[in-house]
Image 1: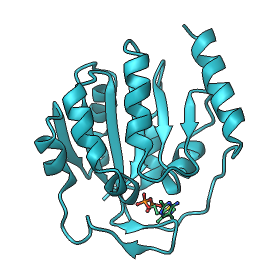
Image 2: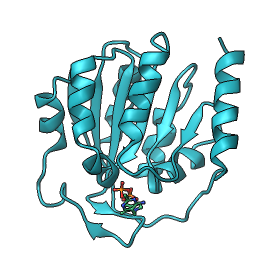
Image 3: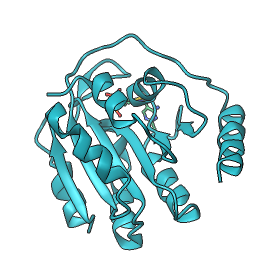
Amino acid sequence: MLERRQFVTRLLANREDLLVVTGLGSPTYDVAASGEHPLNFYLWGAMGGAAMVGLGLALAQPNRPVAVITGDGEALMGLGSLATIGVKQPKNLSIVVLDNGHYGETGMQPSHTKAGVDLVAVATACLFQHAALVADLKRVDDTRALLHSGRGPNFIQATVKADDLPRVLPNRDGHAIKDRFMQALRTER
Ligand SMILES: Cc1ncc(C[n+]2csc(CCOP(=O)(O)OP(=O)(O)O)c2C)c(N)n1
């Protein structure tokens, strides 16, 4: 099993033009802990919506890689998104689910993946080009390359330890996050 912050930090190293959307709760704290970046779009709510925000971005910015980094609980709440992504086939979109088998933010209630629901199989059935389980840090370099490959849509279910880590809270002002993100998109073109 992976240490979630170690995995995320390695995944986002040398990220270049990668646009990152984070699901609410722990994945947002993990991405913030890996280093602040104007091309991080943090979701503080909209549980179940991260993959669709990522799809919209990927379609609007087809020449830039987009990664959604989210939790199993968040992904499970928006499962239908995977079917829509499969139909739209955005080559630049990757969904990375940090699967701790729990709803960490609300008190570590066990999630459906803990009961055996197989998200990689769901993503495969939803026509993702690449869907895989990653449980070993040795696979992080390959996973990072995949995010930048332009051969998506990709789905990674990263099995992470169910640790309750200290929160690293980025800005919670939705307007500020959006404005900063849009500004960075304009200036980095
Ligand atoms: C519609 C809705 N239902 C419930 C919540 C409460 N809630 C916030 S985060 C969370 C759990 C997130 O779990 P997961 O995505 O697996 O992330 P983890 O913190 O476990 O990594 C829940 C249930 C919410 N914010 N919105």
